[in-house]
Image (cartoon, rainbow, N blue to C red; front, side, top):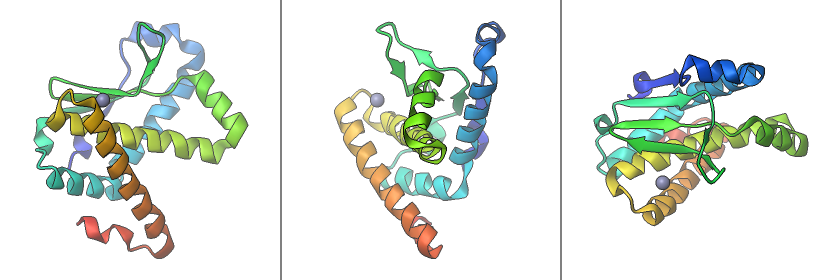
Length: 166
Ligand SMILES: [Zn+2]
């Protein structure tokens, strides 16, 4: 479906050189995110959601999994954005991830980061339809993400959970 639209984008080479020390971490992070967004179970869910919302999947031409975090002027980080038919998904910063791993362990930390990427893609696709209605997009992201996670848990129990998204 849109898995062929997903690519890893590393900003400019210069920027990546500047963060050489953390290069390995961010490259691994982006490849994990790209992989989980391409998973058939998630693609099926997205297909179902887009159909339900009457959003044309082709209104998004490219999905960039960004290697480096985006820092806004107020210092806060950005999860994603939708501009001119393209969606960008940004990672959490290394410092944040380290703390997360120390506190909750590697497995839980990874689960959090994966879910964050999934929720970001859901969120940005909803912006295609609801443009700048942030409140509506947030509300729906929450609802859809809950449906996805419930189904995912269910699926791991009996392996059939995602049938209803087909
Ligand atoms: Zn938003």
